[in-house]
Structures are given as structure tokens and as C-alpha cells.
Image (cartoon, rainbow, N blue to C red; front, top):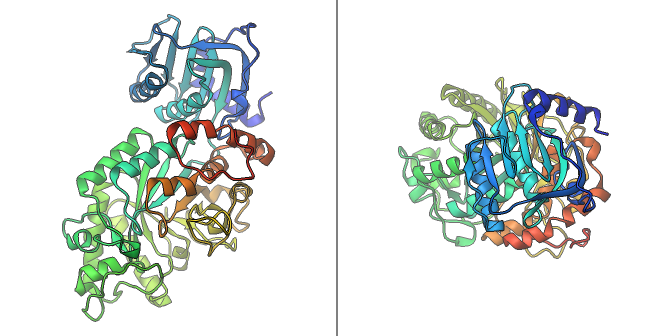
Length: 503
């Protein structure tokens, strides 16, 4: 029997149009599949029935209004895995089809209903992003050419489910970022936070200050090759993410973490002398010159270009580890920069130290601490506690990559906390969601990223998506173990944690 929340989702989905879905008729020739108990993140409700739907050369995909993009995405995946043509056609009453239907405004955002019988598959959602979430579930239950019969009704716990990728300490190409996006969406992550600038590198061309990229972007940690995105490449990343219903939030960290900018333009320094480029890993030593007018001209130009390139509502302005900036200067600086962001039509996201200033209405504080202190004054909080959610932390003392300053984080540690109750001083209504940051001081390749992200990223994703009532380690470890064959098939490098009974 569905939970109360599950019944509410089911009712909303019926209002949204799921009442047109034919009820699956049990097929007694086969026992119900176990695939519905292995979905990750765990859905609100799911149940298997006997039998299933077989994809063959006559199977079609039908796309209702607003569903064409998701249909194209699904067709590409299933054509590759089944070898069947799967043409996309207009909706009809015929069988042997996978139907994608949107409709109704009463369903929660990203909610969906999936119904599979021997006659066909129907995926229904109020919006296209819900269909896309449902497709990720469908991908997990399909077995070769067969989709087991059953039903899923689902909706996210939190609207914000993010992952951060640091491309400043080491540069990652467009193709590498897009590969990571494709891995994120399989677990219903819907936000990519791109850390674009730090002491070691500036990764986006700013036309009004081009040396930021051409000179400040020329290095990386340990003197490794640098790089930067042209504005056209950045737009392409944004578009690729949007095609997968992922919002990009770009970060330009300030007033600290700015050595790449200071090295590029001497006038940004209080003494007018540019420091050398930096390829180490220390933090807290650099600062913009808070009292110079040119600092705010510079930031107005940078933020203006970034805002024009970024369709999402938020820009991230950093604000962490500004040890070289006095507290009074930090407060004055962050308050002024928030106004610049607002003047360019965007809202502010920042690390939780923004609470020391005066957060504007709508400002979101991203909590990365380890002491459960609630950032007062922010309109919302995204949770990224470093000792639980930082994917660059080592799994154990012998992990060849990563750091250990916050904690050693095994999979059970990453899964074993509740975002809804983590900050005692913050009401549950203030929690926007969770984000899993991946800093790259020690990471150079996509294989490195994957090794640190998997299997902990799916753990954080489940905390963000699934109802708190479903959070259970014993069940989770089995569902996580079921992902390993998919990762191997996709060529995803992962850490084979001894905590998981891998298949």
C-alpha cells in the first residue's frame, strides 16, 4: 500500500492525466521482476507484476505535446541497447508502444507515473522534466529487450539535487563535463554547479577582461596543463545540460581564491603589482582589493557577461576561506557584490559564510561546514557538509586519490545522514536540497572523477530525491550493488567499496 505521500503523488498524477493509462493485466507466465525493488533513488511507491513488455522491431515511441525531446533521448538509449528502430510517432490507441504523456498542472514538479504491461509502456508526468526523471527509472528496470511489468509513482523530496565540479584546480574539457552530466542525470541530479575560477586557474573567457582566460587559465595544480572555455563552449555546456533538464550554476569565487585574476591584471591588486601564477593547493592567501573602484568595475563586467550567458536564476559568488580579507571588508564587499548580481537580474548563491554579511532576499547559502551551525539570514540552504558530502574526500587511509582534511568518507557515511534534520537551527522549509561537491586538486582524468563520485554520488542523490521513510542502509546497499553491472557496461570507473555486496 502506498504511503500517504505516495497516495498524494498518485492522486496528483491521475489529475495530470494518468487516468488515461490502461491498467496492466498480470501475465502469469513469469514471476514478478525484482527490478522494481532495485530502483535508485528509491521511488515513493513501486510494485512489480507478472510478465513484461518486449521491445521488438514493431515497437514505437509515441510523444505527446512537450515530450518530443525526452522521446528523442529515450529512443537513442533504447536503439543502442536493443538494436531496434523504435520510430517516434504521433500518439495513437494502438499497442506495442512506449507512450510519453505530459499534461495537467497539479502534479508536483518532476513527478511521474510509470505503468508497464504486456501491451505497452506509459510514462506520464505533468512536465517534461518529470518524464525525463521517469526515463531514468525505466533505464534501470529494462532487461535487454524486456521491460518488466509493474507500476511506479514518484516525486522528489527536495527540488535542488546538485553536484559540483571544480574545473579550476584541474581543467576538464567540454566532452568530459558532458560525460559527467550524463552520469549525474541517471540518479536524478538536476543541478550542476561549475566552479569556474580559483587561485590555480580561470576557466571562462570574459571578453572585457580576456587575460583572465588566456593567462590566468594557462595553469593548473602542480603545473599541469590549463585551459578555458570560450563563451560559445560555455553556452554549449549550458545547452547540453538543459537538454537533460539540468540547470547550471556557475561560480566565480570571491573575494578570496582569486590569485589567477590578480596575476592576470595588476590593477586588481592593492599595490598594483601582479603576483605570479599559482599551482599549489594552499587556500586563504589571496584577496581582491576591496577599496579600489576598479574591483567593482571588474566584477560588474564579469558578472554581467556571466549573467548574459547563463539562463538559470542563480550565480554563485563563493565567499569562503577569505582569510586575507578583514571581516569588516568582507561584509562590505559581499553586500556590494550581491547588489551587482541583482542589478544583472540574477539571484545569489554563496558558501555559508555569506551569512556574516546581509544576505539579500532570495540568497541561498551553501553549507559546507562540519559543525551543524545554521547560516542565519539566508532565504534557503543547500547542504554540502564536507565530512559527509564532499566527493573528493578519501574513502579510507589508503585511497590513492583525494584528500582527508574533512573526513574519511565511506559509502555508509555519505548515506547516513538526513538533510531534513541535519541543521538544528534551520527549519525544514529552508532546506532547498543537497549537493555533492567534487574538488579536483588531485583529480586529472574522467576516470579519477568517476572513482571518487561512484558509489557515493548515488548515495547523496537518494538523500535528495527519496522520501525520508525509504532511507534504510540494508535496502540501499542492495540497490546500490545492483548498479555495478550498469557502470561496468557504461565504462564508469568506480570504487568497489567492501561495504557493498557487489554483483
